[in-house]
Image (cartoon, rainbow, N blue to C red; front, side, top):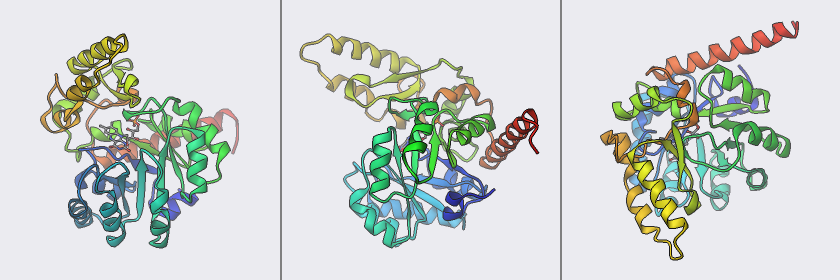
Length: 320
Ligand SMILES: Cc1cc2nc3c(=O)[nH]c(=O)nc-3n(C[C@H](O)[C@H](O)[C@H](O)COP(=O)(O)O)c2cc1C
């Protein structure tokens, strides 16, 4: 398969593993890259030298391109950027803001820069600032989300910018992949399905919860804080939403109670598998994820399903 984006990055398939705090480790990233996709390491709030070790660990397991997600809000962002450049990382994705102040250094180093966006306005701004592509993440996605669905965001951004668009949010199989490619995407980014990959270090309880989930098992917490997060329903989300409701009607809202509930909650889910107190970030597509598979099986399943859908459409339209 050929398109300008995958040629630029040097990968075989237009499939990116989303950066996921605690989950996007060298073991998952290298497995995805070895399988022909683009593996991503999450740098989170880690200092530069920790990120350097993660990059070197990934290089030990793959000679294929992989990327690093930069958390622009991190206190260590400057040193993380230095390390990424020194270590010749191929791709950088960014969330929560604009990578503008680092753009010229990334470009000089030949790094492909791909910010995550949730609106047409931000996509346009990223293009102006020199981004090579944008990841359009719809509100079906797991983790921190925007307001627009993938179905609406992808074509509107594709119309608004001339750089490649990558679709994220709600894609778990070849049908979803075909759908967003038809909307104008050049590649897809998946999070939820890769949490369940064999090479993902997510606790078995996390993987089981995704496999067991149905279409209506996620909720969005944090609406009132302005940082909405999509997670699987559990005791923590019930408590969180109850406090949110109380705060909404409070003339002097105490956000501290919410902070307390959320602190360390993703770690509790990924590492400890704490069913009650963990934040099991997951997209609505959890209902489509039926089993744990290796990164390679996931990527092959996506590509097979994608091709089958396209061939079926060609038959229906009697094209040759
Ligand atoms: C457990 C989990 C943690 C995530 N953490 C991050 C993160 O730290 N940074 C980020 O940019 N996106 C994060 N995401 C979003 C993913 O990178 C990806 O864009 C999203 O999961 C795609 O939607 P899907 O879940 O429907 O596949 C996370 C998603 C999940 C499921």
